[in-house]
Length: 351
Length: 186
Image 1 (cartoon, each protein chain N blue to C red):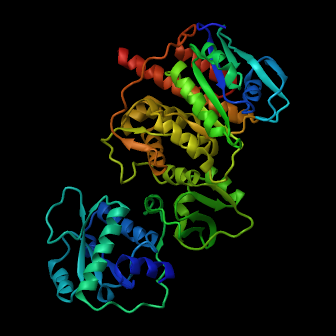
Image 2 (image 1 turned 30 degrees about the vertical axis):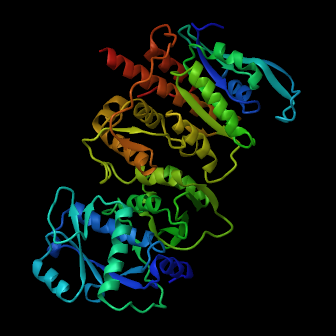
């Protein structure tokens, strides 16, 4: 426990922060669906991103050693009852629309980091009430990690969303490509550090972000790496995660942008510019965006994912249309004019 | 100049790169009404535009797109109304390194909201003061506070590719608006 944590805990109520253990338990026989497993991975990510911001220090453990056990709703009643009888607190992961549950120790997916933070603090209080304050552990918490694999393409975007949500400026996150550290991300999500070679690869290699392994770490070296806007990394992590909509986006929902990412850094192609411009003017779902921007459904989904990760995408109808600009109509109409102007400037003809 | 012509206006304070941007695009050597800068306290550049910069793009179908650069000093603000009327889009260039960059930006946005409220607006922020892109945040925040959604990109107006990015984005926004209007009519 850091001195800052202890001070924070003391200020909060005179209780010295302790080491708490939490077990994340998969569904029996893999009964949970993909969304359920995804929710558990999201919680795992949030636990290490929240490190240093909670009153107690939380580390992962096996159920037998844990104070808190997180299960999927509908887990086997017998083993759940056994854990309860041994004084362990149970937290359920539920999906939207599911109801019931014995108490309010429920995380309904998709849950924001703020909800997890509140729940952890509440559970700390319950543990204080039910047992003597645990001894302060001198041992460092085990390093938690989020590993990206082909079957877990959303772990990195989810980790980045959590970073942005928590904005923990006590934290540094390190991304590795294989064994080597290649990127350092500030815990408040404001900037990252990388070599020029990495940045070039980030722009050119669509699979790079799916190979990265992100974990809590240490500040960047003082040489060889340069500071970059985090939005650049967030864009590519979202854009390259997969061809479908991100798990936290709803395909039936229409979206619009509240601001543009800094495309001066990202340098997207014309199709992306066209799609984002549409989202400035209209509220569109993924299918409508694909049709209007003349891109594939997969590209439209990637654009929405990237915009969402850059925190400039909102669901809902577009604002009331502004007045109509009095624009001079070009000879031959706007469509032909725009095509010829692009060609003249060497921008290439639109699709 | 008149409101019936096709034109893109480059606006912004003195030294933001308007003349350079027009030079990067124009088919002709831009006509600049530059004179010696007598306001070296505000900006150290030796020459500045007192009326306007002018360049153009001659398309093969006969359409001509005129490129105008507004004078940077606020005492020439009366020119902005004339230049911006009927423009197909406005590129607002900002020099982030200036102490009064945000004040300048606010003044330009306020004026443009009044005289060119419905024209596509693209903002290019040059001379970054931070590596993490945080120098863009105050400009984005001001637009948000005014209920304006517009691109704000970090650019170097000396680079043609950067100027083209701004213009390409402007064309995309224009195209999106034309499409929305067409759908609304149909």
